Length: 246
Ligand code: GLN
Image (cartoon, rainbow, N blue to C red; front, top):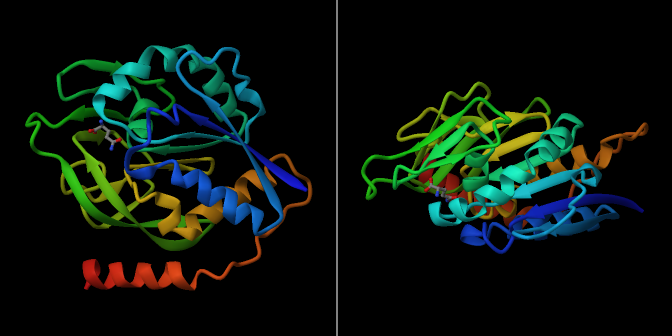
């Protein structure tokens, strides 16, 4: 049986709006294709994590306080995470996790949280603490040459700037900053986004893109995932698209 190895970082700290549900979706949709998902954890105080053995590293979202809390521990992992990313490990980064992989996050108390500097973008919290990007959001992304609408819920004070390769074009909602036209950051092995939901329960195409990438990584014989019955998911999506885009 094929196995996908996942490292879920700070699962007990970064779990806004049930972001850990993304792991449940990956497990379920992999299992339906006879692929096993092995999930291991790194949190504050975990010693000797071997970042090189994972196909996917996952960080969810959190409030500024939580991001401050794990800042030092994350910096200790910097070189290992950079090597894993350069070696093709997939990075799935939601909201707070997304911000922390950039240059820095200047939070709502004007405290600087250094990022790991994997990417060029940086984030500055809105000067008015009461003003945040909150609400449903729909983004048009392109995965393996196929356009797909990605739906979720955003809640961030941070305004992310200097994005070279966005995840998608905003069709409804704010995106990287207030009334932005772009959302998130994307590379073949990186999806960094403000979308909670959890993201993958609302967007089966995104989940399958990640599973297929991880399953085919370092493999001679590439697989194509058999489609699943997503009738219910699609009905839910249509309700939201009707509500938000018409
Ligand atoms: N604390 C960050 C912000 O407010 C990230 C929030 C989040 O992860 N939802 O921008």
